[in-house]
Length: 293
Image 1 (tube, rainbow, N blue to C red):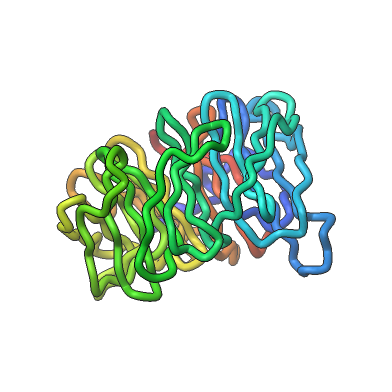
Image 2 (cartoon, rainbow, N blue to C red):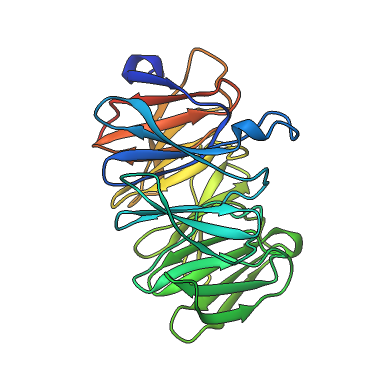
């Protein structure tokens, strides 16, 4: 029998339409998106305290369709229409605004020790900005690209419209490898490869290396309206049909699956305070889980 989400739930928090999630030192940050476009009141970034399991901070956002989100070194960054807000993770105060129109489909904003990696609004260029918003480098891309992840000194960019992934050297800002004829969506970086939404005959998750080598995970779930959490030796997949899956990163095999008794649909997953946190878009809830380490 497949274990249930309910059997490992220790806390439940109501969050309006929770989308992308990231963790800071003591909080889980969640993009709360509107159900209807004319309802600007629920466009917000919300923070759950991992001690109390309660929402303790709310940062208002414009009526915007962009989804960029990141956390690093006591700061949180979130896309807000034609700019990116830098937020103090303890107080929720907006510390600065970076004038940059980033791609609306891009979710996680990858961060290295020098700054942020973001796609332009049209998805035709990848830009590396320092933490003050100054441009460090730019790479023009083929196609309309949507997601970015970092791994092993490279930036990986998925461009669904031309069925391609570009591998870019982080130091030289040049495309070193172009992988064509691949249907790739969401990306998440690991130590030596990028894990990704990769529909194939036996599942929906795969991986790609900088030299173009591709791998698949048999029995992995469909990742539409889902996301990935890559850790040292495992990958967590939040899917819309099979709701939570743990993949052994060494063997690329499904190690464990959890299914909800309710129709929780798609959402995201992150780790904070030693626990997994998952969201449900259709149920407007976030759960804290006692899943395996």
